[in-house]
Image (cartoon, rainbow, N blue to C red; front, side, top):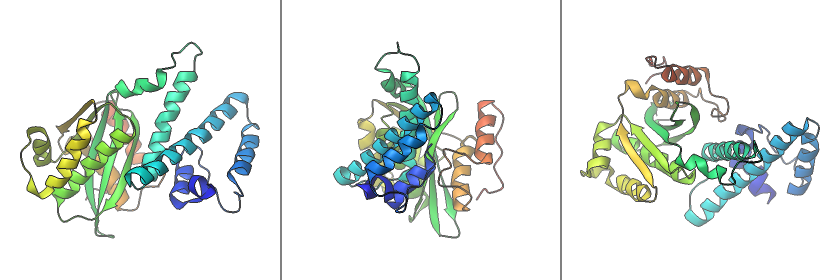
Length: 277
């Protein structure tokens, strides 16, 4: 149990990249129970409100890790630290919003399901690893950054890489229980295939996966976006390709991501970063 919740490599990455920003180790963890007791005492050193929030974060992070572990067992889905961190952050927002006022409805945690979210996707190429970097950025209807993920893949074409990125995005939407989502890509050929049903043999198996998941989501659509309008996702992928993106970037976004998000919210034109590939 200690290994599953605290000491596994991907689990330690979740703890470090989450709001807790701690890294359990074999030296600091003798058992889950003892570690929780230590964290409880540490929480109580602060004021009551902060202690309650920190203790809640510990429980939410553990639950998110456990759920990711169960998906691996039941669905053979490899745990992804960034996806798990994003899931925990959204659960935290739901929980803290629901408990902010005593008279709030107990169905408040489900309210986010109906809030429209936009997932932007893009791909960059890493010359160092000779692999493609896929990036997914999650934003709400106000343009606020809600999370995202990046991953290294190796494919035989750019179309397959773009399709893989969209598949990653729709898997994230399903795993996070996002019911109202629009997925955007600057790959016109792929978006046309998804919207019209035209055959794109090169990526047909991936497109089939995407459509299967889409049927399980109440309100999920796909849109084409210009390259200029997709700078945020491209910059994220490029930063990862140049090893300039920390594992916990979603909790502490780099300066370029913060500035791009702010500019797009203000309606200012976005300029491609110097790291553009």
